[in-house]
Length: 203
Image 1 (cartoon, rainbow, N blue to C red):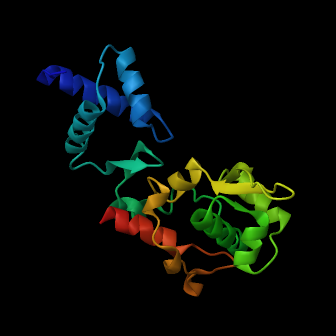
Image 2 (spheres, rainbow, N blue to C red):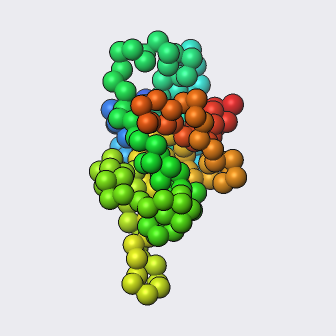
């Protein structure tokens, strides 16, 4: 369809309102369905133009449009992050064991519990597995067709959202996976490889 300026501006505003009202990333497919319900039947290429227009509209604002977890979401620009750290509640931090397990699953999924243990070199405590499941970061991905048919584990869309990744392809190579001892506090650790992936994405 060919947009009149007033139509394009209204469509941009509709998308802006939807994204602003949602706490979770919104997929392009969902945006297209939403706009169709408003009698704006767009193709994927046309939606891209709308999103570009929204990005232009946000120039000079403290937040921006980001591709996250195979969807779209408003996020505070990184230059304002430090001003918010003392007033915004921090998410629960995971233990070193949980972060190592999550890293293994992220890079080797789908993988079994035995495979996770073999890569880490230590047994996987049920408490770690339960924590990652309860936090919505890890989920069953079927069963491996071997004797015993063990459960295969993988990461979730929440994992992508939490670390600011659009897809698993945003992760760096496996050999770059390291844990930085300097970030460890109270037996907790941040996974620098994912942080670096997020940093590279912003460049």
